[in-house]
Length: 130
Image (cartoon, rainbow, N blue to C red):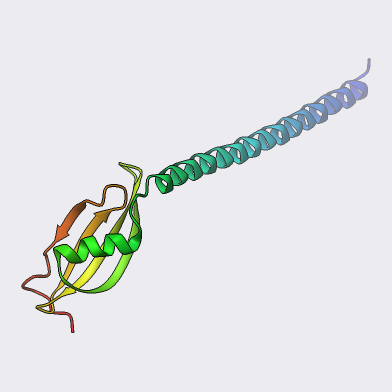
């Protein structure tokens, strides 16, 4: 073989190697994309399952929970927030209540047990709600 043929063969080998590397990169990208897609689907399924489980554990309606909160702190409900407690996989309702002294107070009630799980009096002497 002469020198020109060696150079041509060397050039062809380099091009083959470059093509193989490009193909491997494409395969890796496709694999990563597939893994991400299946991960997202899996995580979404778990999230939906947990949410459904929490929904099935609800024993009290929002109206019943309002009555429970108002039995502890009589007044007018200003705001209601529904939160998911990821420790117990249940829903909690936080009620902001303007009491008879015109003070804003918070009561959190568990939708599974109906128990008052938090009573916040932080606003007692510092904030009046008009």
